[in-house]
Length: 267
Image 1 (cartoon, rainbow, N blue to C red):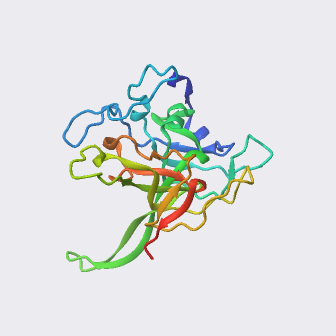
Image 2 (cartoon, rainbow, N blue to C red; image 1 turned 120 degrees about the vertical axis):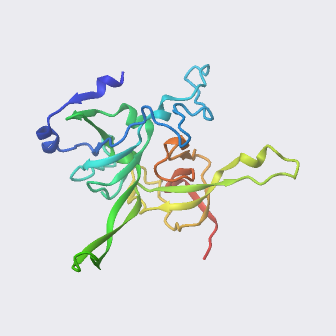
Image 3 (cartoon, helix red, strand yellow; image 1 turned 135 degrees about the vertical axis):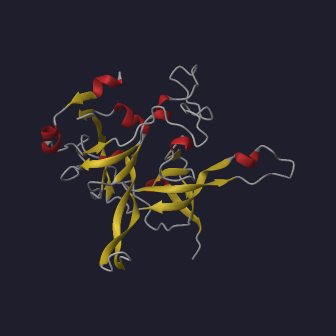
């Protein structure tokens, strides 16, 4: 089925093409096919997670565990389309924050079913901007001069860092572990609250939503312990720890609109 979405294009067509309908053209720069853990074991499905099928009979691990969700931005749309009266646009109004070369994280279902242009042996994917949660951007932070010991001449050295930008009103939260009920409790140790988390990364809130009743929580700070709306079902940015490229710490993806209250703030 996935082959139906793959299209051969020339380099000229790829560079001339302009993404429309809020789509971002991204390049796949790695593959999970044959990927191995640090101990050398080839990994596939995550057996610790199960996903119920429509009929409720099949609860095996999902193919999405093996999908490449980390992509390199190749081209962005000139602008983002939002119209509260047009369902073809985005569900919310936000600012374009992506640039070519950014590394982005999206959801596995969209990555799996994305239109996939193939150019000179490399695969690209068209991802909806609204389905991109976060990006990392390499920025130059300093330029220094060092003296070459062999030639005695100065040479310039560039120093770089990575900036993390949460998009589309999303925040990334650390999970909060439930306390043990007693010293004899051996069940609660690996269980986490589903209604709260600690803010690790956040970006700018969305400007507005299609529904005027929906608004993004404004006052968010790193380290906040926040309470989530009962409608919120937090999910992991990277579901398979073996394929983690963002963080070794599991992080939840949560829209600002589902944050109801700051329970604790470290001022």
